[in-house]
Length: 173
Image 1 (cartoon, rainbow, N blue to C red):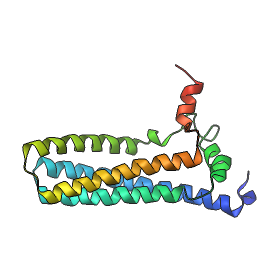
Image 2: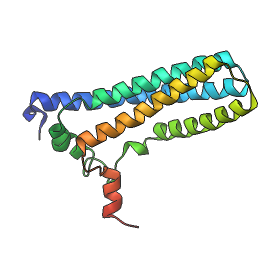
Image 3: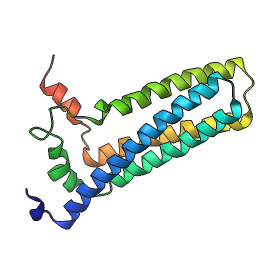
Image 4: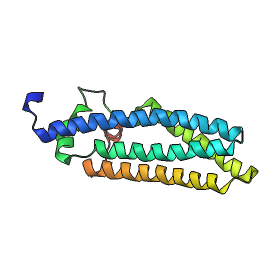
C-alpha cells in the first residue's frame, strides 16, 4: 500500500503511532536519568532531593502513559491492516518487540534496583512521610502504566499474542 492510497484515518493512525512512540522513548531516557539521580540521592541519604526526584519520576511515568495512550488512539483496523504488518518481516526482523528496546531494559533494571534500595532504606532509616507519599505516587504511576499498556495491547490484539511471543511459538528452540 502506497502513502497516496492511505485514507485519512490510517494516515492519522500512523502519525499517532510514530509520534507517541517517539515521545514515549524521550520519557524513558528522561526517567532513566531521573532514576540514576534518585539512586545517588538515596545513597547519600538526601531525603529532600530524593523526594523531588521521586515526585518527578511519578509525573514522568504518567506522561509516558499518556504518550502510550496517544500512540494507540485509533481504530484497531488500522493497527491490524498497517501498523502491525510494518513491524513484521520483511519490514523488520521476526519477533520485533518494544521489550527489545535497550533504554526500556535500562528503565526496568534501574527501577528494580531503586525499589530494592528504597525498601532497604525504609528498614534502616525513619524516612519522612512526604518522601513515603511521593514513593507511593510513583508506585501508583508505574502500576497505571503497566495496566494501561495491557489495555492498549488487548485493544489491538485481543488474543494477546505479541509478535515476539508469536515468533517463539512458531520457532521453538
